[in-house]
Length: 598
Image (tube, rainbow, N blue to C red; front, side, top):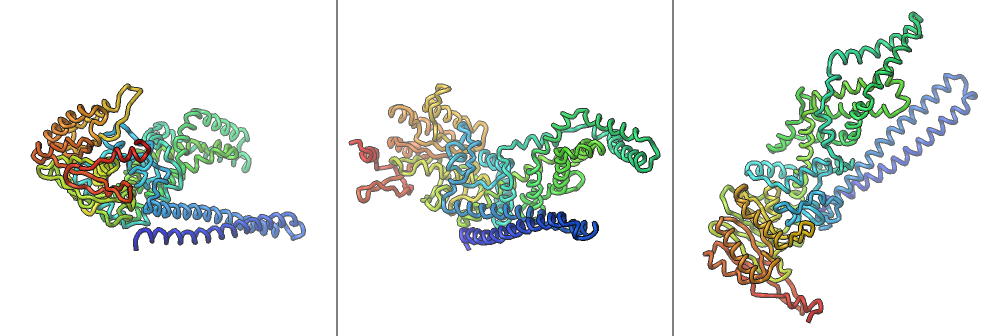
């Protein structure tokens, strides 16, 4: 069964389940109302029911039943939210397959970097981007990790192969991928800076680690409670002694109160996040992964005492719950008697010693598994795509029927073959014929390949390249930089790239378009020759048909390809098929005529 049918079937199934839960919630709400009414009636007519024992017993039963119904309703409410999000996850999967993924709210706009060597030109982030299409991460770490993978492709074959294995395995675990998405959507923390929690876990409060101070804070409440019993129950000692101790403990709580409140706030604001992290890591802990990369992720979920990450996060969740009690004014007396603040600080410091330094690693694993799951979803949705073969052989890019992954169900696929002495494809063609889309097709698929993800092609073999582009350059009025000069600066970076990176794969769109035709023709010719002479591999698109002579002058290390249009029923049309040779068609005057310029 294809993925679209499965998603639609799951939406129907969860929809029926949601209706059932909603009905149960309504029944429970009604029963709560009836129970509360019965309790009130029992108390009103207490005198006519007989003795206090009977009245108290009946009232207690009503209260116990009411408490049970409250707990039951809370669980049903959580289940209702969980199922609702499951429906949303499957609906989003349907939207992705239908090409409506641009409706997704998270476009990764916050990761846009116009100065990046390729991400801005290849639409990696922002509206209609690769990130918006592929992302299923919902935690702060997951989004950041996915963005880093897309911006900084892997440069070693072994890591890429390990990730390919992991993504292939996750593609078969739809239930796990959907669980990760649901858990992540249970909270909205995209804007929360998780670094504050990590820094808190690494900081130490030496005072609450000392055995002497721990002993004082543990023993003092016991002494105080004992004196209360001796004074007010046994009447052995005077009543002033426990009162003095209470005053002393109250004074202890006023010491460093501001600093203590800050410490509690640092962890308390992540209450919901900690709960979600615990669930996510708990799900990972239960899975018996086969791939090396996923096993390495799951095997590292233990602290220095052999306790698992879910266990430790559960402990932290309980401690945060204890901190929450401080917000209750009624709890003030308990805080004074038991020195509750100090008991919490002692336990928090103990937690930090056991797991504080490894917390960041655990959270990074959550981000990694979310990023991998995003790619796994694509592998599941598009089983006809292929895992590219990464070769250590230099200067090689071969792809059969490669298409743009973001053109859902509308891809026009072409073949690409760069190997041996062939280094540069010079692509010509008229306006809107598909040159820029083809360049982005190659660039985005290389990004996916180096992430360990499947690519939109029937087959693909590629060397490890450092990707550099020069496609979308605009004027910078603030810095006084014209688009032409901005293009030159980007080209300068490409020329220098081989001094730092592995072999460069460059993509130049409408080369030197910001200057006059004479300078553009001479400059472009010299630039392409220089890139070819340095051994660079890449694609160049241009409207300057005169550059076609480079194929002959370079002895076929540069090869001409083109796109063309055709006319039918007095309309201009495009087939977006890549053909060998220089372009023989033009359409600028026709397009001008179409908009009313004769």
